[in-house]
Length: 422
Image (tube, one colour):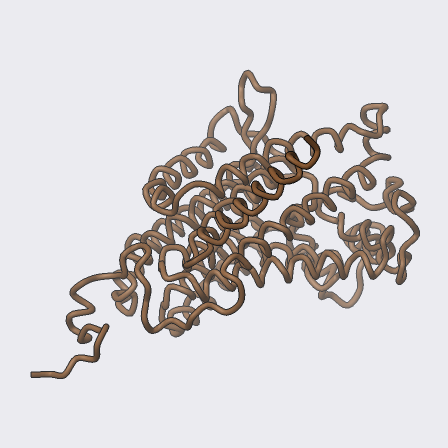
């Protein structure tokens, strides 16, 4: 007979049993380092601080445009505050949902996300600057960008499917169906609305999930070649996209046309210096920098708060990354690890793309800075995603008990204070 190490199954038996069950501890994973609730506080604290900074910066960056359009400096700010007041409770509610519920919601959420995205082919579709990725909600008077919610739905669905096929991903047939087929369909629906920037972020979700799931690296090489070919075709076939590419990588660029937005973003960052010109004192927001409150809000932040302000925002994204990476490292459930990886690739990748555009390293793509830029759909979807990650952090071994113990300490302390006053 073959000797079996205690606590482990032979390789054939392990394959036959399928993927790890939810909540089962993988004996080969390293033990968690640091407090059990550290991931929860890192993700939650960084998300709320970025949200607060974003609301303040939207007020500052949009005030002039809002006066010009509505006569009030608070138009865009009130919208953003409204979305934040909707999104923050949704994040808290999502953080209390058990992991098993997210597993059951994976297929329905993906189906709903696909149907919503497909509405861009109906009369409900709305276009902005050549992109048709918004839909109008009758009776509400509000437009929604369904691709933002599709990112979250796809991340959760990939977590479920790839976790179930964890030991079969070396076979390209199991990787292709249904993972790649559904992912390509989702990308195709977004590209049908001519939103290449969002499609690239959606591709990051797929890459992040599959990398942590253990897909062989050789398949990533093939995917990079194929993806580069598709992106090249989409860029070459669009004069507008070609103009954006040549504006960054070409030898010369018209400062009054293709390079206008990038140059004024750099002017804002350069004017801010170390300490900034002061909150609310930006010059670029006076109709010089297009999308100052949205895609280029990082330039206004750098102008008004200086290098220190930009470093604080970068530091908060680093804290957010540390929290999510810690969940990926420590959580025993492969569904949680893979879903968190997809969400992390979305949030962190989109932040790097946005900042790369603002500093002139990348062509203008049109993706917002998560949790900071103006935009209702993007903000609510991102806060929901952070709520899902917080639910995963609460499910880390020992985290739930530690959170309950701390709440008990707070309640007892408040009770003592109340008796003392009585």
